[in-house]
Each structure stands twice: as C-alpha cells, then as structure tokens.
Image (cartoon, rainbow, N blue to C red; front, side, top):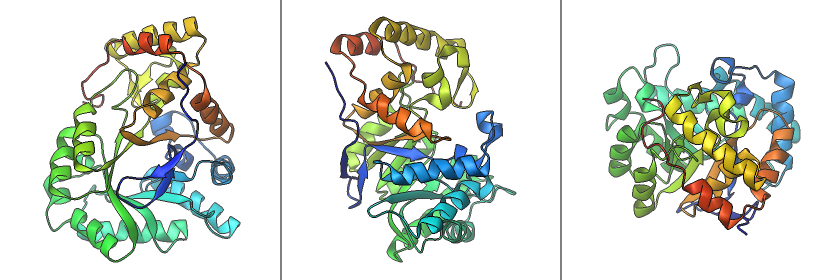
Length: 318
C-alpha cells in the first residue's frame, strides 16, 4: 500500500524557506470567470484565505495579475484583519506585465512589486517570480539582460524578496532563461499531471541545477478532479487525445475505489523531484478535500495500473 504523508515540511531547495509539500494557489480567489467559468465573490474569497491561513499548509501562491489585483487585495485584507501573517507562513507572488499594453520592462517590474506589497500589506515577500514572459507584447523586451529579470534579482539583493523564481508555461521559453539566470525556484503548471508530461525535461534540468520545482495545477484546471465529462484541460476545451487517457484513469480509479482527485494530487506529491504541489482552491471546503485526497491510501497495484496509461508530452497550450 502506497501512502503519501499528507503534510510534510522541508527546505525549499537553496532558498532557506521551509514549506509544506502542498501550496494553495489563489488565482481563482481573485474572481476570474473568463478562466474558470464561475465567479468568486469577495466574502467567499476571503473565507477561503482565512481557512488557508488557519490550516496546516504554510504556503500560498498568488500574483499581481490574478483577477486584476483582486487576489492579492483579498489576501492582504485578511492578513491585515489577522494582524499579520501567521508565524512561519510563506507567501509567493509574481512580477507581471502591464495588463493594458502587455509591456514588460524594468520599470513595469518595479511597479508590479510596489503594487503587490501595497495590496498584501507587506514590506517584503518570501518568494518572487518572473511571470509569463511568453504572454508579453515583446518576448525580447521581457527577457532582455537589463529588463525585468535583472530587476527581480536586484529586488532580492535589496531584501524585498528572500528568494526568486520563474513561473511560466512554455518550457522552450523557460529553459534558456533557467540556464542564464540563477533562479532559486520554478513553477510549472498543467504540464506534469496524470495525462501530460510536457515539462519532464525541465524538471530534470531543474534538479540538476539545484532549482526547486513547484508543480501547479495537478488537476489540470478541473479535469482531474471532475473527470472527462468536465471536458476542459488547462482552461480550454480538451482534445479527444487528452480525454482518452483520462477516461482510462477514471476507470482504474473506480476499480480501485480511489477518488480521481486523490490520484491526480498524489501523482505529484509522490515524486521526490517536486518540492511542493500548488493546488488552486476557491472555497473553504476545498481545503479539507485537498488534505483528504493527499492522505488517501492508494495501493501499489493501483499505481502500476495508473502509470501504465500513456501520457501526452505535447504543450497543452500550444
């Protein structure tokens, strides 16, 4: 019987930060119906944040761009309401492009952090990522040697961020940057799951360079929690090629009496190369459900069957 310890805490690579093996993602808490297909009103978002901060997980991930700043603002409102962050809690956020123009230069990087600190009510963050350069108006501007990445490392030198990372999607964009800059951590999303292994080469590359890997969206934006009938992967309509292995996995889970979400979450948790798995939540009850799935006992026979299903290696957002 394979049992993943539900909540463990360990050093995050070379950062000096001690984080739990689960991190809660808060993009949906910022109310992003265009991405998730539903709204999250302010009190629901804040109730979810309160539950995160009161629970056993000590790691939360957000971004300046989530919900046009609403995610950080709601988190900051709860932090202020509590009189500060709980002891040893770790906040991760990101430097983002200008959402109006999609420009991302050094000055925008400074504005992004200033806005984040104001919204969160903090004078520094624990982990700060350079976010989604492939979505910018100009990739060359966003990745220029004197651009926002250089500012990111200056922010670390200035003590505004304890550690710095890279959070993006396209591994062909990410890996050259990881080779050129000494990032402490990297976030990959929707690319290391039960049905997609697109980021496997980057995980190996990261481990070799001592970069901590944070695996986001183990449920693929809902598909691995709700099943093939959900029909979407990585926030877009799923192809038949993606849904076929999901149906096989669902059938295996039914045979072995396993919640699909438990298998999806533990696929990431059981991999020793993954420092922490980022799970998005938008209501308080999802927190306990995530912890229950993490603790679910899955037999070795079930894992052998689940891992025989052929995974896709293509970029899910190509």
